[in-house]
Structure formats: C-alpha cells, structure tokens
Image (cartoon, rainbow, N blue to C red; front, side, top):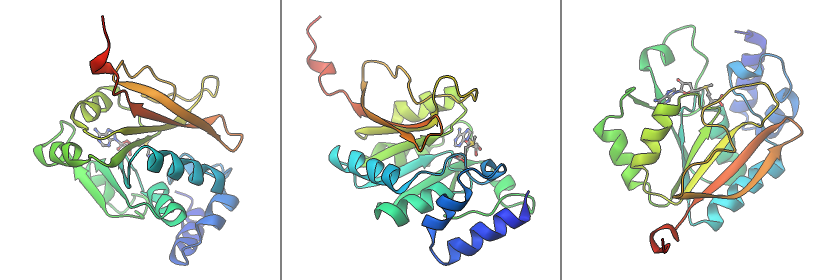
Length: 203
Ligand SMILES: C[S@@+](CC[C@H](N)C(=O)[O-])C[C@H]1O[C@@H](n2cnc3c(N)ncnc32)[C@H](O)[C@@H]1O
C-alpha cells in the first residue's frame, strides 16, 4: 500500500476536504487500493438528483470496500450512506486499507439481518460500485424492496471487468433511468428504476 497516498487522503478526510481528494487523486496510479472511481462535483449532484427524484432519501452500498466513496457521497450530497462488506477479518487486519465509514459485515451467503436490511430499504437506493460478484448481486437484488439500483463501473472498451457492468440487462423488473460518465474516465454511473408497469403488462 502506498502509505503517502493513504496518509494524504486520511489527512484530507480529517479536514472533510473531499473536493481536494477527488481533484488531486482521481488519476493517481494506486488509487484503486482505496477506491476505483473519484466522481466530480457534477457527478455527485447527478447521483443525488437521480435518487431523490426517484423517491429515495439514502443509499445502501454493497461491497463498499474502504467506504471512501460512501463518505464522500454523504459529504457532497447530504444523503446518508451505509456500506456492506464481507470478510470482517480482512477489514480489521493491519494490512487492510483504512475505513472511512463503519462497515456492516455480512456473510457470503446472505444472512437474515442483511435480508431484513434489504427488505426494509423501501426508500433507500442500492449502490454497487465496481462490484465483482454476479451471483451475490442477484441475491441482493432478489431481496431488495426499494425503487432504485445504482451501478458504477467501467463501460465497454475500458478493459476492466466487473459484474454487474453499468449497462446491464437487469430483467423486466428494472429499466434504465439515466446514466453519466465520471469525468472522461470511461466509468459510468447508471441509474435503474423499478419498472412499475411490469405487473400491468398485457401479454
Ligand atoms: C472491486 S471491490 C470494489 C470496492 C469499492 N466499492 C470500490 O469501488 O473501490 C469489490 C468489493 O466487493 C466486495 N464483495 C464481494 N462479494 C460481496 C458480497 N457478497 N457482499 C458484500 N460485498 C462483497 C469485496 O469484498 C470487495 O471489497
């Protein structure tokens, strides 16, 4: 781990200076050790406006890693963001990156408390940033009761693999609301809304 990068970001975090974090480190070669994407102010506003327009007042981030993105979203938008991770031992070991929000630790097969969290998330958007576990994604979506899924990740041609990708066919229950590129990084924020017409479709 690049200690100077981590220490610089921690120092800015202590001063709540998320603007300097994104402007100074968005293209740092080791940035992915703490976070894969560093959105602009415009990107944060896009995220906030989209989830609020669709009836959400908070975000639950799955596979939040260090939680740096989640902390910056709260600072930039005022929306509360909580984060779920697996492997509690890793996050508490001395080689692990620092964490910027308290992590909710879950199990690889969803446990009952995580399922309750998803079922109760009626006005909370579900966020996946650079998530890389398709079968787990399907499980989270299955139990989620709210109206918005946000997927952040690489577009086609970036040469990085995630599962899900931002432009995914999520089935007939979800439709794309809008999307925006993060700077000119070929990473995208994609907003999906629950398709309420699904039940009324005449077949
Ligand atoms: C590539 S990292 C992305 C981390 C962070 N969101 C980011 O953008 O920097 C994917 C994360 O998903 C987590 N993950 C994988 N399977 C998971 C699951 N079933 N539930 C929660 N988190 C999971 C991994 O531990 C890892 O931290």
